[in-house]
Length: 386
Ligand code: NZQ
Ligand code: ZN
Image 1 (cartoon, rainbow, N blue to C red):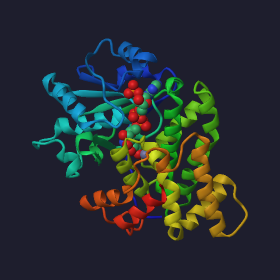
Image 2 (cartoon, protein in one colour; image 1 turned 180 degrees about the vertical axis):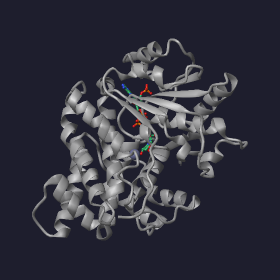
Image 3 (cartoon, rainbow, N blue to C red; image 1 turned 90 degrees about the vertical axis):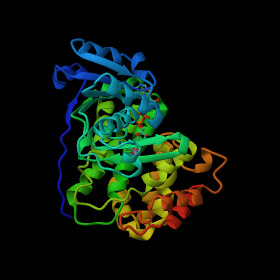
Image 4 (cartoon, protein in one colour; image 1 turned 90 degrees about the horizontal axis):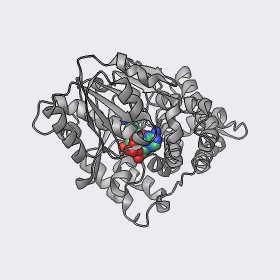
């Protein structure tokens, strides 16, 4: 096992009826900015619950943060923060609203002239404005990590940011919110969380037995609950296990002491920037090709995964590893997610070379757990995904 340090300061408040508790987590004298997305929270009762909980507080609101949180919209929210002298941010939404709030948390304290530099120049956030979250969509794990991904559509960019100052102070995880989530987003959540685990697991063995077992158990839980939660999002047992699995998939725990990959996400963000494909679906497009292309360096973990997660007990390491890839692609199909770029766009020609060009431009020339994947390799992986 590799050396590591682990600190995750986010307080999780989990369970039905817990949204009311935000009142005891936010300082009484805070000037709050409540941030939300396109309006789903006004239809499913979550907005009402938040407003009721905070009736004694001083609150401003900013709605309209779109999926793939958009820099231009966030700049308007930043103006509100400054104008109204906001001291605490409350994100009520999925990964997009939470990520947008993280950007605002950072930008509100940023001393430079241009907040885009936080993303473009990869400036880590050591201290941000404090913020809490009420999660409405299990998927990204953003509710318990310190990363964010922000889109700038005018330049077709989707860039990451983060730093130890960007953990939420608290996050409320009430599984009953899942009941209003559309099927497409439930599938996305399952695929995103599944791939988060894979990115931190499908590398090479380093004797981290516990990390492997925790990762495999998250994958198994997602596989187990997927059919039920897709059929009946009001099923509390399935919803609570789905929600906690998504959080555990990317709160930093399983990444400690092990190598991680993240090439699928890096390439996937470019597919969203270029074509607007949902984040999770970009991952499903690339996973099979990425693992086939890097078969030799990943086959031991692929075989272990096939055995332990999918019960493949016959065959050589190579045969099991191939089965592991097949099972993964079949899992995406089973939750209604297509796995070829051509399923999403007719304009896929040249995408591989365009992604290679973008990676080069940003100096991302050494991807994967070994740092050996070049933009030319990324080009081939994307081409295998057409
Ligand atoms: O905007 P509203 O009206 O709220 O509707 C949203 C949105 O249209 C809807 N929704 C959310 N909760 C709902 C609901 N509809 C009904 N009932 C509810 N309870 O779902 C739609 C999608 O929401 P979004 O927040 O975009 O989805 P998700 O949570 O999948 O977030 C995706 C974003 O997170 C980034 C992705 O790149 C993408 O931008 N990621 C963030 C990560 C992180 N911070 O750690 C890691 C991930 O790998 C990912 O990159
Ligand atoms: Zn993801």
